[in-house]
Image (cartoon, rainbow, N blue to C red; front, side, top):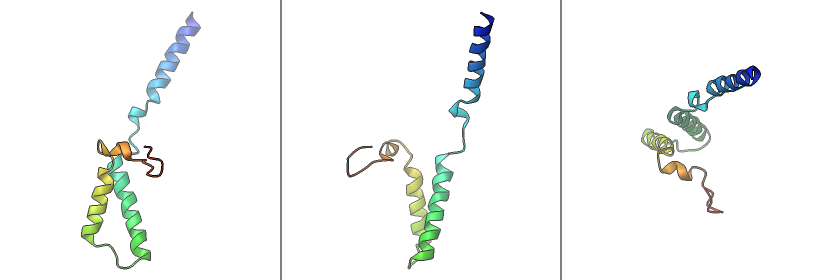
Amino acid sequence: MKKKLLKAISFFILGIIFLPIFCFSYAPEPTHKVLTLKTIELYNKFFDPDLTQKEVSQIIEGSVKEDTPPRWINHFYDPQTGLG
């Protein structure tokens, strides 16, 4: 009986420690902003004409807004199959 109780408490504590609620490393706004900026840098490096500052800000705004409801439903939308 003591062993079962100890096992249950251990699983409970481990469950709390590893809850994904406490993971903040993938906040959408800064992640999408940085990825988009890096993509624009690569684009401007290899293609002419370079994107203007206005175009850059519009692209960043669009990439950040992709995770606002209900847009995130189609985040992984495949137009060939029609599946999300």
